[in-house]
Every structure is written in C-alpha cells, then in structure tokens.
Image (tube, rainbow, N blue to C red; front, top):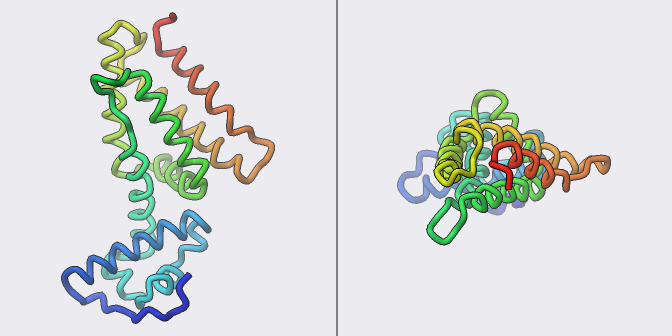
Length: 201
C-alpha cells in the first residue's frame, strides 16, 4: 500500500486526470478485493492506496458497493476475454475445455475474487461479461450439435456446463483455505458433464 506520498487529486479534475483517478480506484479495488476480500477493500484503504480523498471514490462510483461491483466485473471481464471461441483451426469441444480450465485457473489464482463472482451470480447480479461468454459457449456447442456430437440442445448443454463450472470454481477457490478439498476434482467433474451432453464415442 502507498504511504501517502501521492498528492490527493480532486474528483472535479477533468479530462485524462479524472479518467486516470477512476481507473486507479478500480485497479486498487481489484487488487485489495483479491488479496483481502471486501473487509480489506474499504473506502479508506482504496483511497489511501490511490492517494485521493474519499469524495473521488463517490464521484466516480457512487459508493463503495458500486466500486466493488465494478471491480468484480473488471476481474471477470479479464477471464471472459480469454475465452477461446472455435475457429477454423480449433475444435469446438477444445474451446469449451479451454474455457473451463481458464475459469478454474482464475479460481485458483484469485480465490477471493472468484467467490465474489459466484456470489454475484447467485444473487442475480452476474458480471456483465457473463452473458457474452455464455453466448459464445452456446455457439460452440451449436457447432458440436451440427456435427451430430451433442445430445442436448446447445442452450441446455451450456446451462449444465455453466452450473457445473460455478460449482467446480467454488471447489477450487475454497480448496486454497481448506486442505480437505481436492481442487483436482474439477477435471473429472468436467468429464462427467461432457459425458452427459455429448454423443458417446
């Protein structure tokens, strides 16, 4: 955390400086949420880290929960941006597998943020990029359906995989703090889900 050597900046500052303050607040919130959860990403801690007064946070994000939501969105956006949709050089099934593994990597590397993402999904406020990632998954599964490799309709298969991925991510994220959990179980979970939606063989 910065020691207060930064000069506090006014939320009324315009142009690039205001945008820089907004981004710095977001980056700090992502970092502090990832390291300490909501208890560590307080308004005081974020503002001290960035070197601004509290009004800057409220000017850009309305309140602390607004900043937290924006930070969780931004963290999941980075995961969703890594989704590898099917292309001429890739198999649709491999795209689905790669995306699952990326989500599990996020859960392992950012367990606090992963838990917050899952909480938002369960609370009916999923990060904004969830819908886009889900749409891309349905498209990939549609390709498998067209090849005669998918037993279920693509939206149904995508829902099963998405629900399974959320559960597996919780397993992986919680295993960081609980040695009784085996995060490697996410792989047989994926295999079991794929077996339930794919044509055998």
